[in-house]
Structure formats: structure tokens, C-alpha cells
Length: 301
Ligand SMILES: C[S@@+](CC[C@H](N)C(=O)[O-])C[C@H]1O[C@@H](n2cnc3c(N)ncnc32)[C@H](O)[C@@H]1O
Image (cartoon, rainbow, N blue to C red; front, side, top):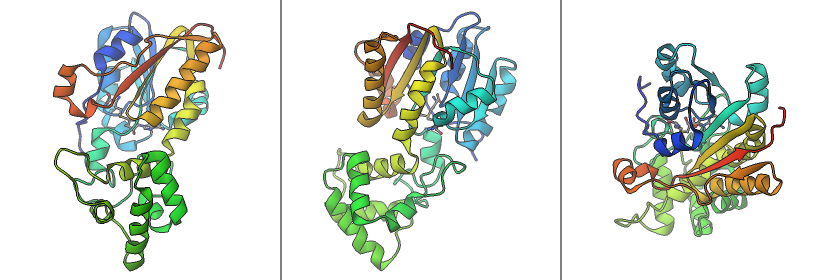
């Protein structure tokens, strides 16, 4: 395991602007990852406290030096934000001045965990948390039915060529099981043609779809949003960073519903996106969108 996180946090200044860290404020970072956003909140004011969560044990272990560095102000729990209610009760979470969710995978996971990238050949695993899931992407690719695979690639990858890709997968897996990232990327190329210079790799959407399916990413966000809102104190803000339209749609619809019900107000009418400077420094930020919702009325958890 790498000792230090290689992840470059996105939209850090914008998150700080939105969450307004100040004396005695308490925050929850439910996707702590490499700790970049938590660190920025802690550094913004010496009396800020951050409770953090991540479901990747390797990420939690990597955060240990930060717990020491910010003794008494920073704590980390291993768990899924989809279980926020249970985790909050168990660890006696307070009401928060701000909650941050930076959805998706970290660069650490993409580069050092199995299955996420077709730039190197690793087993097709794709589970972000080995403790929460048994089913790997390899199992899905080799045992899901033709119809199930088509649905996964279409629903979670919005892949228009799902049918051709799935037919090829079914043919290839009859000959031998598809076990690694490069094998799967190759099968996709056999189905729809090779990668073109300057265009996204033809396997990108298939990989995204499998990752979302294996980790139940959309279900997790759906379970998380209403509970997170309950955990906000009056005037507290929920900041969500998403990386594709499926995640962003869930956040956008949730914010609109809460605003319509008069329980909160949307802070920025348009989602906040990276500046051109950030895009140059960190190209992985290109699809990130930040939405922020402020709680008007307090409700108990
Ligand atoms: C984009 S990274 C966050 C990076 C972090 N904000 C930083 O500044 O370093 C997403 C992180 O969320 C975690 N994650 C994804 N889904 C989760 C879930 N349901 N519960 C808890 N953590 C989750 C991943 O393990 C990963 O570490």
C-alpha cells in the first residue's frame, strides 16, 4: 500500500467558500479519501472539527498521520455513507455546520486497487470496499445474462453500443473467462473498434457502468442525501461533488425537492465547475460539479 495519498482534491477553494469554516464549526466529510478537503477545512480555522468517513480501509489507514497531526479535531470512521444514520447513532455524531460528499473513486483507487483502470492489467475487481461487497466486476462480466449486462451498460454507462459489446462479451466468455482489465478493454475494442486518438477509450463507459453497479453507487447516494440533510444544523450546508450526470441528477433533484418543500435553499443556481487553472493543474477535475444546499429549518435525526 502507498503510504501517502496521490489524490488531487477537486474544487477545494469552492468547497471552502461554500462551507464557510470558522471558529467552533463542525463538519462531516463522508468521502474523506486522501483527506485533501478535510485538511483544507481544518487548516481554515484552528477551532474547526472534522468527522470523516470512508469505506476503503486503505484510505482510512493512510489517514492515521492526519489524525495525529490534528489531534482532538479530526476523527475517521470506516463505513459507507449509505449507512450514515446507523454510523451517526453509533458514534454520537452531532448536528453539522457542513457536510461534504465528493462522490466516486480516488486516484489512489484508480492507480493502486484492482480493476478500475484499463491503463494497466489488474484483476477485474472494482470493489471500493472489500468489506461491503462480495460480487466483483469479474463475476458480473462472466455470469450476468445478456439482458442484465445490456441494462447495466445502458443504465449506468449510457453506452449506446451496449448490445454489440455484450454480444461480443458473451462470445468471448464462452471460450475463456474474462478476468482482467486489459482483457475486457480488448473485448470492447473487438466489438466497437479500437481507441481513436483524442477520443475517449471505447471501454470507458463500460468500466464506469460496472464500477457503479458493483459498488451500488447510485443507491448509496439516494440513501445518503435525506439522512445527511437531517444531520445538518439550521443554516448548515450540504456540498456534493459529482463526476457524471447520473450522480449529478440525483443531487440536483434532491436539492430541488427540498427547496420546493421550503426546508432548504439552493446556494448556487448553477453547479460550480473547475476554473481553467484547475483544469490545467488537474485534468481529472474536468467533469466535476459542485452543488450546495442550505438547510432552513432544523429537524432532529
Ligand atoms: C473522489 S474520492 C474523495 C477524495 C477526497 N475528497 C480528497 O480530498 O482526498 C472518493 C472517496 O469516497 C469513497 N467512497 C465512495 N463511496 C463511498 C461510500 N458509499 N461510503 C464511504 N466512502 C465512499 C471512496 O472510497 C474514495 O476514497
